Length: 347
Length: 133
Ligand SMILES: [Zn+2]
Image 1 (cartoon, each protein chain N blue to C red):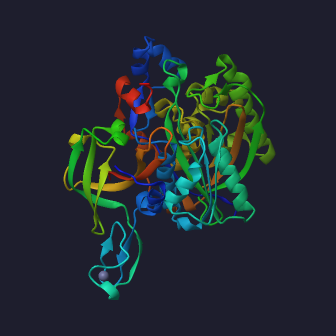
Image 2 (image 1 turned 90 degrees about the horizontal axis):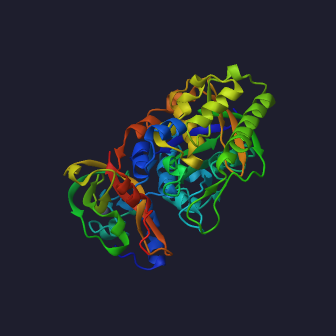
Image 3 (image 1 turned 60 degrees about the vertical axis):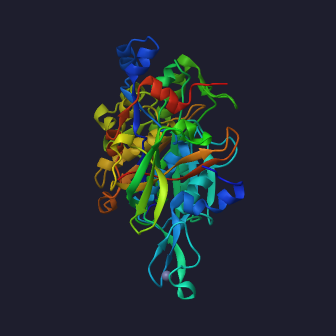
């Protein structure tokens, strides 16, 4: 049996803010924002939530789904661009919280929004080589945009966790393709609170070039045709880019929409592709083929070809689905949102 | 919430992060926080580590409007006495619910949250809180 996903779990905070509420505060036309970015609302973490607490909740769901003893997890890798500490790993806090310490490897991955899929591939390599029996890979973020910046409408919070192993695989990771170049589309300097982006530079040479190259090369490498794939999940900084990428590749949007969560939760950065993949796994049937392609600014894409097995039907049902978290929500006013995101500085 | 020294906080990670307590295999009583000696059985007791399920019910609660300085940004919040399904009671915050929706007898489950932070450059203290089932 090929190695792959043994269990997965997700977490999305309960709070939301509507795009029109943000637009109202900044005197922007809400319809123009909604049409431009394709976003209706985004998730907002509670005041006591961060990328680590989100990761722990997702990881606990993944362990429950997998039905494994957490002490058998030989590696915990988390991908995030919003770790609570500048120096001190998030992975050890998570490993302790799920009861996987002390006999394991643990590290934090950073690569803008593709750190989560990068963590998945690194864990897959350790499983395939036989270095570990089970590994845990997580993508989790609570990202922020500067108040008034376009990113403020989309920067959201959420995460997904994957247990990868060789026994009890619910979805085989058949193959992958990674593609990376030095592209300065988005950055944040050490000690600065908010990122900067190269405005119009973010589209063609960054997102589309990497997503399309990685996806095409994966299909060429595996000899799988676009028409053989049941679902495509693309990184989703807004709701428009993934659909445009699909169009460029010649993929009908019906194969992309099930994994497109951006309109209702926003851009969860490192969590985005792993969460989109989880939403597809929630509804997939044995035998389905899924291609999931992340994108991280700076820039790179990981594309994975995944085949759902019969095992998924035996294991699913004990943990909350993506749609359960999407439907569990409470709206904030902009004032409440500011308190949640600690954007007001009093000093 | 006074957190004490860094080593004192660190020693309690298993209980604070994931509700590790103890159980007396002689009389079947559960302990949280964990005990080393069973008060019922004394020397005849056999006390072992126990991972609580994290499920319980709200026994009583209060809404905190004036919290300690290290938890100021969380106010108002609900502080409750939760009875774990195995028996022991503990004090914890209830999250993911509006204060006026909390009810005595409400089933809850453990969640992992930030409890407090020791200033802007200090340690972040994580641990259990409870949320509606
Ligand atoms: Zn006893």
